[in-house]
Image (tube, rainbow, N blue to C red; front, side, top):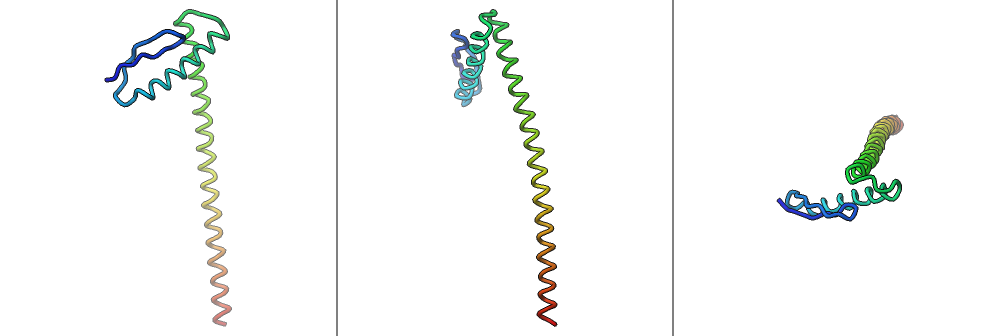
Amino acid sequence: MAQLTIHVNGRPYSVGCEDGQEAHLLEIARLFDRQVRQVSQEVGQLGETRLFLMGALLLADELSDLKLRLAHNQSELARLQNEQTRVEIRAIKAIDAAAERIEKLAAG
């Protein structure tokens, strides 16, 4: 297990992570640090626990919004794929019907 020092709101914290996950941990720590610093700038120093709580709640709210958008986009993609399938089936039927007519004309 790897040990890293991350910084949140100017303070160092030692945390562990799985080997190979160091870069990811540093990135999400930077994201959290930015959120905490933004909260601190907007409402002032609340105390570390409340500041971290507000930062976490804002990130959770953003995550929730993204999940809703993802679900909506997945639903829209499924609808469009179904519509594409229906259009392809209609096109195949039209081509088959045209081929039958051409065969009848050629035979007749």
